[in-house]
Length: 224
Image 1 (cartoon, rainbow, N blue to C red):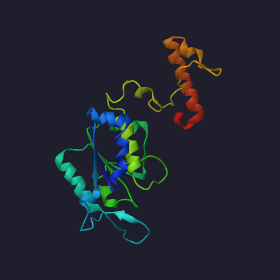
Image 2 (cartoon, one colour):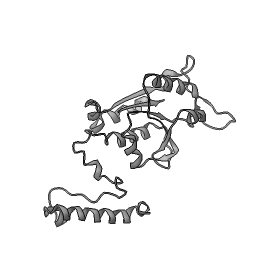
Image 3 (tube, one colour):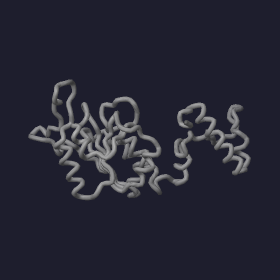
Image 4 (cartoon, rainbow, N blue to C red):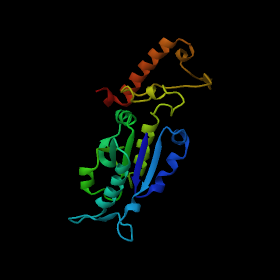
């Protein structure tokens, strides 16, 4: 899989891909992540990428021309399955979206900034608009990193145990059940006996019950 990220402040994206699971996935060549500085496509000697909005109002707007040039260059080199715009008014990211995107081959992610992008970019280039929540960040870089993490960890071979992702919260519409590790008794706080019984069918049944109970208590909206 290849992910191309277009950003006004690309240095914000360095750290997430240089550590832990994402770093190992890149080093193992299971995914390619390429970060593009939109200012490389900026206009005039100032590498301008934003301008005042028509009609007046506070806030600058990312211009269409630099974005067009960057996307057009990328598309001339390969075909892309999705061109995603990270924006607070997009569809809220969920596990199903991450599952679907993890199956794609080539994806472009455009990070919003300032007041957003010229609407014509959204009308003519973007295939999906995604938000990570009902709040506003300074830019789409952190949101893009969240999206990438949620996608890359699902690629076969990225996690040490490929079944691990299948038991995550939201994979089956429920929250994950509680988990425990050694010691089985710490300060009198004991692990449920069922988990140390070695009875796999009963353990799985217990986990299913716990997942349903936890979801009903913490996220009843998921059960509707």
